[in-house]
Length: 402
Image (cartoon, rainbow, N blue to C red; front, side, top):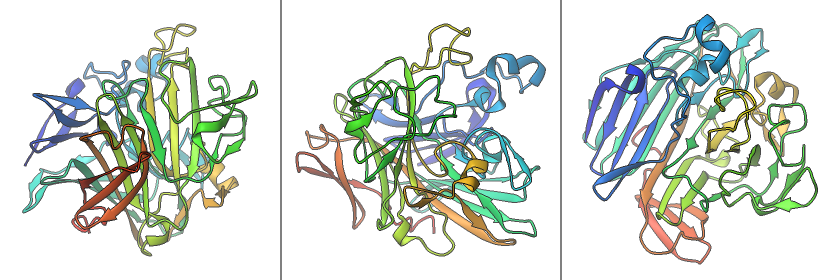
């Protein structure tokens, strides 16, 4: 096990946490996780998306120079996964504050400490105090020996003098070489919803505005009929968004993407709503951002009107109103029976525990996808639709982070 500070792409300050079969790179800039890799033979396969348009010149964001192409600072540094607090969605005004896209945690630079070697693994602590909002943040990233899992703890403190509403999200986005046609999406939701008309997916999507379904395999289309969105179809020329409600009676939240050809599974997990302690922050939705080549404008395309050069799948977990921002969450405090925002009292600290597993599996147990995920002593049991199971090492109760 080892951890080290280094320079990543674009000369960005970063920390690399690594063990024999698993490695994670975490940028200081906007808390991005551009790399989450598993050992594959003598090489490594990265599950996380590397946008073709990510700026790697080493230059700092310059509004006058860069906004015409990248539009906002977030897209200048975008990669893989990152935390979204207190806003999950586009820029807006909420609670008297101007919210940047996906919040201040995805807008500012984190202060990363030196990685620390632990008895069971390695960790690094990062902190952030945003200038435009009263929240401060402490993030602990951890690897444990023998686990192909990236564990994260985020402590959020309200340093202001009034109660503040907030969204919380993890923007996990997968890309090639892991993501390809034929990958399968699963989670524990029993109901799914498509955003209403009037959002960013109006010109890019094929799914029917504001409709709901009990299964990803039968999502309603704008042109009529249905489409199976559980299976990744490759570049279709559309970009859509689907929200699934995390069951309120669940003790464990989980979502997976399986590549049956490579026999790799990408699994995110967190404490379910029914098991949350009073001082914990919950995640109430599985958000699928299906960007299959549907954005024919910059920076997704080289020039406006040309082909979208991106193919990625966001398997995000959040508390928000779709990905429409805190302002709309306050206007729509509930979606499919689940809350779209939470509140933090002045002087109080609450914590969110989250993890992402990425590793190969043996045999054909998960070739048809993941039907269920259950916690057991020392790990998680993943059961496929064929009834076969595999057990993977994981601290699903987050005992080491607690």
